[in-house]
Amino acid sequence: MLKKTDEFREITMKTEPIFQGKVISLQVDTVQLPNGGTATREIVKHPGAAAVLALIDGKMLVVEQYRKPMEKFQIEIPAGKLDAGEEPIAAAARELEEETGYRAGRLRPINAFYTSPGFADEKLFLFLAEDLVKGDSRPDEDEFLAVDAITFEQAQTYIREERISDAKTILAVYAWQIYRLTGKIQQYE
Image (cartoon, rainbow, N blue to C red; front, top):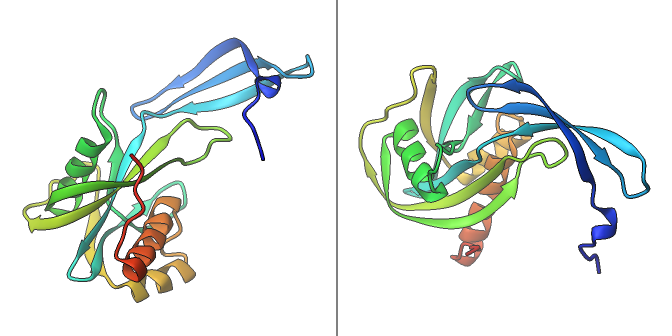
């Protein structure tokens, strides 16, 4: 069994801020390694994010938008970054409504995970949205997206075609599959 142990901890000796953006910052840390040597670590700091598995009439709500880093359109579940001091569940409710126009009568936590722990501290919180009520979407001024509701079979096809290729949406589809098979969502507390 693996155990947490301080013998492998890296000690930060120096932090050099490189970039401070609207969403992320980048820093380079010089660390002392467990063997006494030193190394540098390029670290992206992120405020965290919330994402929503929203099911309506047996379908999953998704948005399709152009993702510049990948230079392609992506189909994803509604999601977005946490505002300063915002609770993940509040961000999930806000993002669902902003991107799709739907409000959730109930949000339940599914899981939380780090998106790329090798270089970033972004933690994403995934929620199940239930009892949806249609309203009006209000995407951010620089956000251009199409909203759709897709079947489980469509989601699987889109994963194979890499139209869905981000971790949060793939994890949501797997959570949906478990929900379809068992009637239960595995929740963290």
